[in-house]
Length: 274
Ligand SMILES: C[S@@+](CC[C@H](N)C(=O)[O-])C[C@H]1O[C@@H](n2cnc3c(N)ncnc32)[C@H](O)[C@@H]1O
Image 1: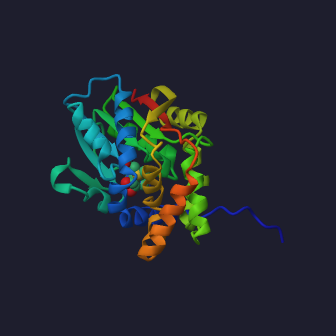
Image 2: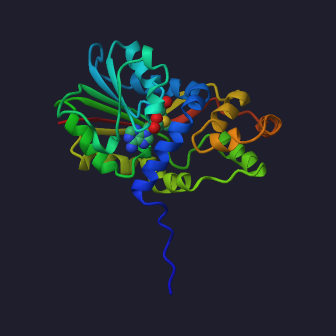
């Protein structure tokens, strides 16, 4: 009998696991990673060449709302959509409206948005072509679509260092995270794949560019809170007792000794509905 390569989790199971992981880590996201993603969202919105003042913009995978904040700063009128309603509930009373839904099946009418911004959410969808095709459908003709992801193979060094410390303390990657990384996230981190898929979905003026963003990650404390509050690590950390959490944080800070790059590499997809 020949063994087949491990295909990982089926798509529907993967999406359900991603939803649950974000639902469980909404508070952690807001206090850890959001400090970094706030800068990334501003930089992404800053790539827009259109004047977004007054524009109705879909914040795809809105999470706790950092891209919506950046859109409000330029006078846009964002509407969020996210798989995890718990992420949308963060500061719900004071943020723009949000709808729980899957980016792969957008629950909006055709041509209803002037623009779409997807800050680090496209890298979560197993069906990238279907998602981009749906984005084109809900965009008005000529509307811009901006999306960010991390370039494959160009990770900030804190990621591997903190994961190594976590493993020394007994952490193992959840199954969904392995499938997510190799079968979904890493593919959107390939500029040629991103560009080809956006064109296949019917977008024009497609460009993919590398944009390094200054996020202050030379501070090891920030780097540790970023990595320990991710949806794939938070549950492990939260299950440790207070002393073990303290030991883990101290060990991670100790390992992040050399000078860390302050910036993160970001990949931006800039395209337009025909
Ligand atoms: C890395 S977080 C980014 C959140 C926010 N945009 C930011 O920059 O802080 C990814 C977000 O995408 C959402 N997400 C993942 N898969 C999704 C899907 N299929 N449809 C809609 N949202 C999804 C997650 O729930 C999470 O809030």
